[in-house]
Length: 308
Image (cartoon, rainbow, N blue to C red; front, side, top):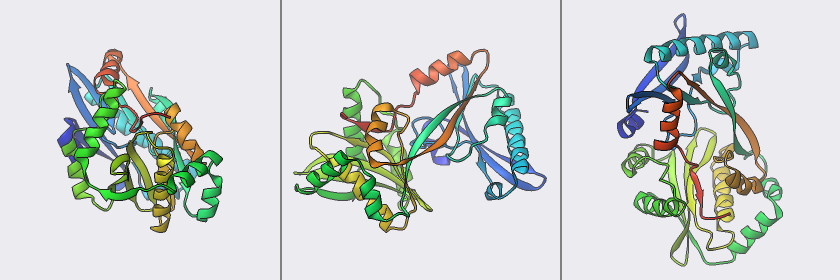
């Protein structure tokens, strides 16, 4: 979070919510002032962090429903009090998957949008995972496995950023990530968690996947791909699924299910859907702040593809 603050221009506001002396929630907010407008995010856009918002203490999952509701009411009330003191034109946070009870925030005047992500259960046998893939997906993987290609783990962010700019530029979009120094520092400090994998054919890079691994979860977080060769995306994803399973991870997440053309591709791996929420609130000048967010610092999908 301090790296995000350093590279993004947002001010980190790390809040904790206590019940007596017990810390029951941490809630990192990020504040930015733009053209006289205040905006609060958790997480900020362009950081490759898909969700953040309130992080409940581990005990939250073990207590009774009534206690859970009391905890969430306390968290929503305390955080709303702090946000009200800041008085932003626009406040926006994205919850982690599995945190279902956002009612207290809605009761405090926030609106919520349902979002989705795809997950694959890696505790199942590899053959079961494979059989769940769509027929066309399996055929593409078999076809690509017959050609000459190489795979490598790489920290070549210069190449990744160059190809990303070219691809997004062709689509008339700006690159939806902070500058290269940001990811360089994050990957340098967390080498076991953040990695990039390059897939090449005849010396040409045809797919790059950025991954995040922590505890039991392995995520496909960002990537770029060119459809010059048939089946390389499917093969690369399947190879990373096998790598994650062999390393003992229990869940494989593919970020991007909220974008129609991307979800169409990802669904061929027969994943399950998990629910999370985008929660926001605007005051009297919030429409202008929201316009600034969408048009000046707006977030684009992280999974860029040259074509379907």
